[in-house]
Length: 346
Image (tube, rainbow, N blue to C red; front, side, top):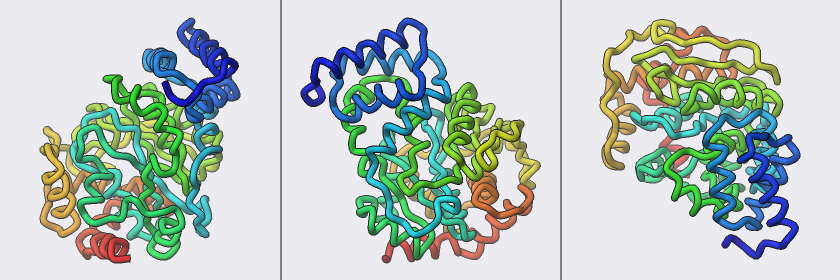
C-alpha cells in the first residue's frame, strides 16, 4: 500500500478506475484528480495497476494527458531559472521503442552548442544504459539541486533534470510500473512536464497513435514550437532507415503533419540501422566517439538528423539541410564536446 488512503480518496479512485475499465474517458479535471491521488500516495497498488492497465489498452486523449500533466506540474520541484520558458528546449521522449543510442540527449547537447538553452528532462532506463546513466558516466552531475541546474542552464545553456528529483510523487507508482511489461501513462505524461518550464519540445513517441494527442496537449499547454515524432521503423526519434512521421506545433496550435525523409537533411537512406549499444560501456563509448569525431557512420547521420530537428525547434530559422550542416559543423569543431566539458567541470 502507498501511504494511508482515506475512504474518500480510495472511493474516488475506484470510481476513476471503473470509468476507464468501462470504456469511458476522463475529463481534464477528472484526470488531474485521479493522477493527484496517485502522486499523493493515496492509492493502493492493485487499483493503480488496473487504472494504468486499462489506459495501456487505448490511446489517452488530450484532455486526459493535460489533466495528468497539470497534476504533476502542480507538485513539481521547479528549476528556478532566469531563462525565459519560451526560449528553453527539451528533447525528452517517451521511451518504449527500440533504442540505437542516446540520440535525444546528444541532440540536446548539439542544440545547446548552437545557442538554444536546453533543459533536458529524463530518467533512468530499464536497460541500465539510457541517457541518464550515460550522462552520469560521462561525469555529468545528475543529482544536482534545482538551483544548481538553474545556474547551469543560465550560464552554460544546458542542464539535465532527473525526473524523480523533480516529480517525487512518481515514487508511489514506481513498483507498479516496474511490474508492468509495457509503457504506461506515465511514459507519455512525463515528457510533457519539464521542470524548467520548457515551451520548445522535441518529443519522440513509441506509437504513431500518440502523435496527435501529444501534439494537441503541447499546443494546449502553449508550446512555442514542438515536433512530435515517430519513425516508421518503430523508433521514437528520427530514423535514417525509414520515413519519420511528425506533427508540428507552432505558437499554441497544431499547424502541420507529415513525414521527414533523410534526404531532406542531406543524408542518404540506410538499409540497416546502426548497431545499437548493448551495455553502458558501449553507450558511453558511442557517445564519446560521436562527440570526438571518431564515428562517421550511421550513428552520426542519425545524431545530425535529430540535432537538426532540435536546432530548428529551438529557434533557428533554417532549412532541415542547413540545420544538419550546422550540427555537423558543431560536432566537427568539438564545440559540443567543449560544452559538455564546461558543464561537467562546473
